[in-house]
Image 1 (cartoon, rainbow, N blue to C red):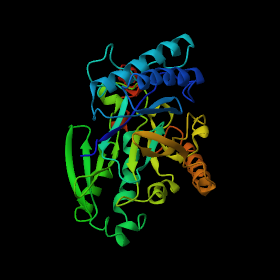
Image 2 (image 1 turned 120 degrees about the horizontal axis):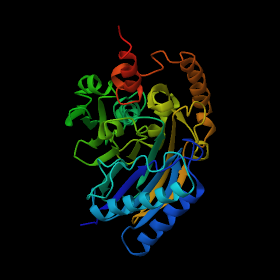
Image 3 (image 1 turned 180 degrees about the vertical axis):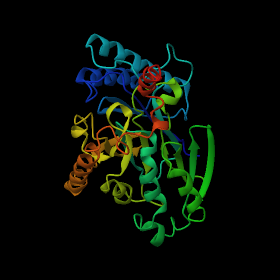
Length: 363
């Protein structure tokens, strides 16, 4: 039986350069050095280090399976070392995603975002890794539905016999910590009832009807872990492509529409998700607008062949222009909803402290 490969994407905001806008080159170099040492020791098969805004992104392949303690400790130790460097450089918010003092066996629940999947490599194994900044995990709900359930986006659902049966969605209720499994197209309306509420229900994974993994996202919500605002969640997403799965073009197509996501300035606003090349993932206008990058890899014997910067394409120029237009419209609302998040979503920001002060003035 062929050996399975595990693809792990683990990220954390360990310090912004300047403010929350980007990542310092020395931080990226430090992470590369540490993962290169791990590769030389045989802990991982291959790796790639990048950033989306102020988030440090660790992309790793290995044969140890998901939720492996050694891999998660490697990521944690890398973040801790990079945080120390960030503090020396006085980067902003150094270590803000590290919500624990010491590693406890798994980085889930400790602050960093995690998306992992295990599979047997096919004859050709293309994957797309999406990384967001200034947005929440619910940002993937809309594109994942379009990719795996909407025939107006993915023609393969109609004309490809290997996709015609549809896909199964795992949805996570992040407030009650419950999971739902819904099959499309037969339970499409039930799925939409849940995932249309992006702040409560998040698509955690997508599977073929035979159980083969197709996509997996990070669902960690920092405010729920910390009980207070400590920065936005800035999620990651892995999507496998082709040969019974959506084509690369079908996977990218939903991002031609810059849909609204929560996040942006102080994690307290709705704004358009702008698809950009990695070099342009440095949000600055009102700490935004929210950004998403897409790196494509071919995986061969665990090696990461790539990346191809998939949004570095003039075909997405209109989406970027439209995102700026929507950003102008939303910003014109200032502190008014629907630009500012509704009150129930503001409870983990610094707003409750202001409301407490106001209540003391009540007569």
